[in-house]
Image 1 (spheres, rainbow, N blue to C red):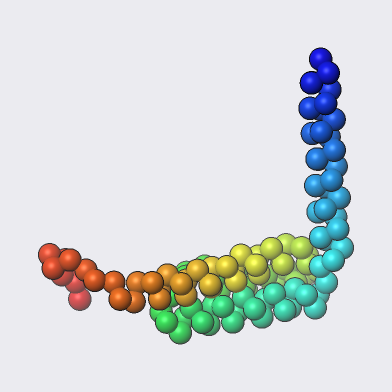
Image 2: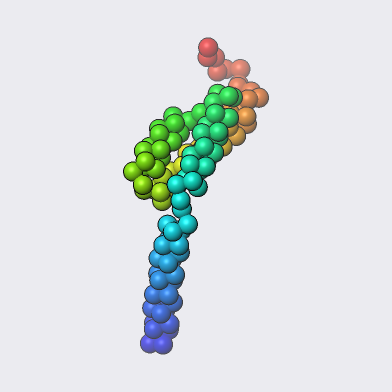
Length: 110
């Protein structure tokens, strides 16, 4: 019985602390920070595009993040901008890693 109450108390404490952390993040996000995140995401997208590694949805995410910023939804805009930036970086890494890819002789494509 005591283990159960300790577990429930721990779970409640964790839930309360995570909700407070989310509130703190929401308070820390400002329009200026989101603009910088969107600019960083666009730079990452451009870097990926420069080597042919831009992913399909990255520019769509950036456009949507700009719209959310204009509406004042800073938290959602920041999350989307971070996701777009990650896609930009991963697209660049993917393109660079496959640059020297050697295909087997039996695969022919043009």
